[in-house]
Image 1 (cartoon, rainbow, N blue to C red):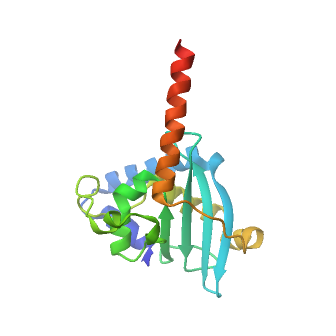
Image 2 (cartoon, one colour; image 1 turned 45 degrees about the vertical axis):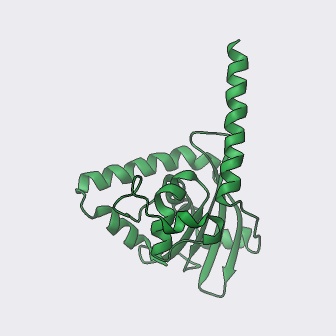
Length: 190
């Protein structure tokens, strides 16, 4: 498992404080944009020490597409910088940039939901320094959990474990949505 402190510390390596602040500001802007679309769809507790929260949120670029974001946190009370995490997201940005790194560091939840090459091939083009960081959907999920409060999530959604799509299923679904939107735009232009 990884911690928020690991992620934030890794973002800072080799970057100036201004760059880190810019990254976090951009993630916060994305969170505010995604906030109306974030929904908790389930929650499962494991003993007295862990909680897994299942969420969906709209794609920023394809509004009709919903991504699954699942966060396993080693707490049932409050997240802090030392809370251990495992994360899952079927968004392309997470798959192409972070699956390899999270898997390598023990922070990938549901590794079987990705093709083997995502877990074994270094993301040389998209994340050449293997930075453990946030994609906008994972950051937004973590941020939403802290705003919503974990005990409240457990109380409202505890015991609900929804099915979530693997990366390939989600990629095919989004491709279909984008194709429909493209045809509709072409029809409207005529």
